[in-house]
Length: 204
Length: 335
Image (cartoon, rainbow over all chains, first blue to last red; front, side, top):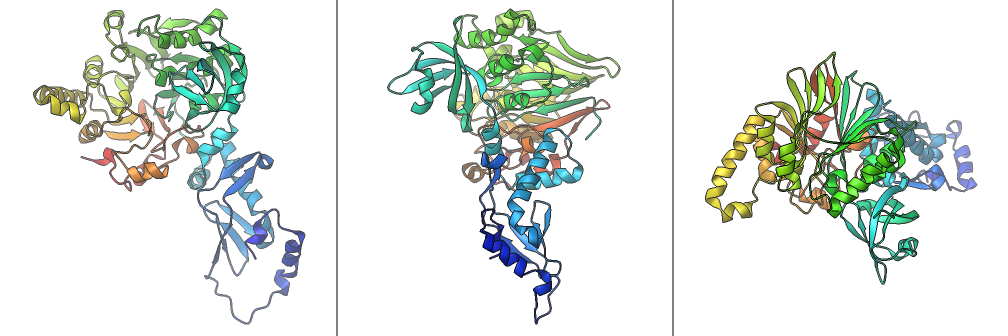
């Protein structure tokens, strides 16, 4: 139940359950063992950033450690401590922690403690995909080698690439042998994901 | 952060080279820009306010060193102080024309000068600390007489007083690197040629010409011994088809007490790690840089500081070393 409540899309009924189980209403006939922390795996593979426009893939599912005495939750390796009533917000808090440390590292403002934490977080997330997804298109020059049936482009670094049909539509005005410059959204292995602002290089 | 004179970032661009030096003025000197899709382009595009670039230096015009030039010149042309490059192949060759056209675009727009890279050129100087970045190869004659682009690859050195802190030999052969640098003991040797110098023979070549190779290997051992760098940074891509770096070359460096660091992991160090795509250390991320679009990072990017005339590695060097020790066959730890 606890894990399910961590989801942002949890129904209002779940929030109601939290109110009912507030600390003053809790009762137990066994003494709580102060060192017996409970661990829960949060069922999450991605964190949503920028309103869901960007997804941050998690290599490992986050582990939530709950202190039975204080009912304080800690997201292991993320340096996040929350009261149990805030557990439903764990996704947002993790996304915020990531964004904050990313911004600090970008500005070269990480403290020694931040650096340790940032390294721990980077070990748990797919930072490469995150950076590739958020990057703006690059201006790249190339030459159209073949347009139909499959589109092939020779890029300025000598690499040849077969362009996916939905991406190749941007080259419809070009003829085979034309040199062009364009803004290309590049994915993994520098593969073209989209093409825009195509200009023909007339001096070629 | 160390209060340093210079900050030198060796970028992980996959198979290719890219170094960014941050000067005390906040300007950048870029030595090689990497291939198309270089993460340096993303990083530069995301700087607000944009960073001024004192100079872009291309050690030679191979695609893995200069491929991303157009991607930088187009949006940042107005902030570039100068570009320096070589005429390292037939001027009508397609490869040269692609790079030259990208570099010349800013010249046509009156944005920056495009100059020839030649021995004796001083790219940057700090007179109080006697720190200089200069070109030591090729001379005009060496440039004209070179039989292939790698032979005329520019060699840059960063010196502080009498000490050579970093040497960038580009893709030069290791024996020629030793000849060019003489008996200079560089603290850090960048590469050369992604850890696979062209004169370092593969096993197959050694089997074919065993007698010739005995003398060749002796010369290479002498070359490495004369260079004897304290550190070496090898910028190499996991998926490169050239079998870079050569394990024997890394071992040779390691035997000379050189601490070798590679930007990306290759099959010779840990096949399982590579196949699983598990990064050893997220070097680019921890330094606030951008990771390469391909490959599996071993160290990823690495930063050095020039402080009081010495070269200091970033604070993550020890952590990376610990992680490397857990790999199957880390070539850099072999003796």
